[in-house]
Length: 68
Image (cartoon, rainbow, N blue to C red; front, top):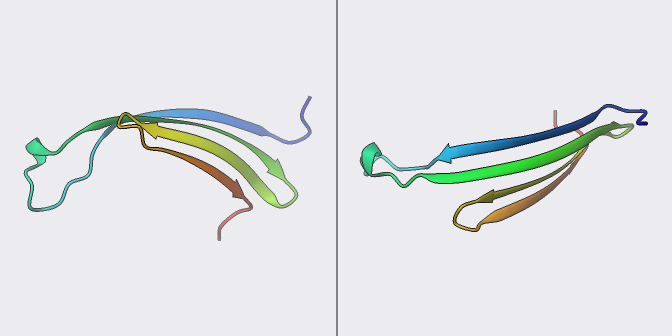
């Protein structure tokens, strides 16, 4: 069906970011997740991904080629 390898994946994360002035036990924690698909091409990998955090922030990414 496909001439090149196809990659599919998903992630689920739970965590947060804090600075040194805040106690780790008081840091807010958030649930987030993402899905992605990719394929090898003559110009390098092509990846399309989407991620969202429980606060409603979301991101789309299109990556073409490889970073060296």
